[in-house]
Length: 420
Image (cartoon, rainbow, N blue to C red; front, side, top):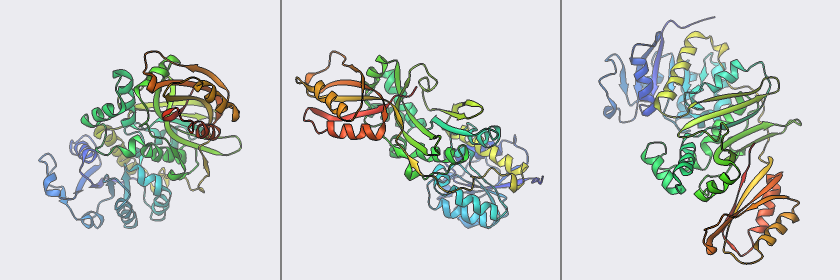
């Protein structure tokens, strides 16, 4: 097996993760990896005295792409111009390590083929779950199993917000503001709280672990924005709490289901115990059963560890050994999971509301398991919850569309799956 004596590295991006990668490489603890170039826009403002003078700083991307570096580390994020730069690096005979989940989720198969064609490697362990080596475990440690399901808390921002809403009895807006102040949420948190971040990571895990490439745009997402502290109070009544869960599964008939959104989970379960920005991933195989991975899913240092680990792998492995995305046709995806559900209504109270709600569910063949109404709420904004027996998400959607037309609603009903 071929190895590289010293891996010369060009770093694209000197933000939080980029600086953490540089610190590890400059600390002298990693052998056979040498940082030679750092690219960043307005690079003059980025200079630090702990980077050796042998490293070239530049704001010209071609200084890196036309250099003698062996590996380009892409940490600029986003789809463009990252896509064009990674293509250029692979075409010019350089391997690539990236933490860019959107890039890999949308273009990973194409870029993997380009890497193969040019005898190079594309590594992306840091694109999912930060410092948790999930992808390497799926590609290598569990390669002998046939994986059929993944469930995970893949977004640290949502994990932080929901766990703070639960523990500190905060409304969503206050928990989000706290997450932003603590550095766990961006100024624009849309990609995180509305599910796009977790969907991209789920698409990567589905391709690597389930061997079923899926389009990110085909994954149904539900925002955590409508969650209120009252939902945690009602969830507690059924020994549950709420977390953003990414799910993908292969059914016996070969169909692929994938969805990202808030769900009720048992409060004492592994998912229910996740707090802060931690990530947790469960994969289920036909032969090996369930395997769990947990750890820091965000932050500069954990993500940098995954990046540097990929650099070391490139130094040890010949291109044919690289763990690229599988070459397969894109699978059709459904979000129509069958599960019990929690439905919270917020109404202006009057006689007959419960009878109308029950009739609406009955018209669609949905059985109500229980109805819960806690005391001490205002009559003009009264919450109550119906827990439903297992039903398809599509059937529930049609039932709620009918029920939502009734005039007593103060806000639209909120439906969340209940996961065992």
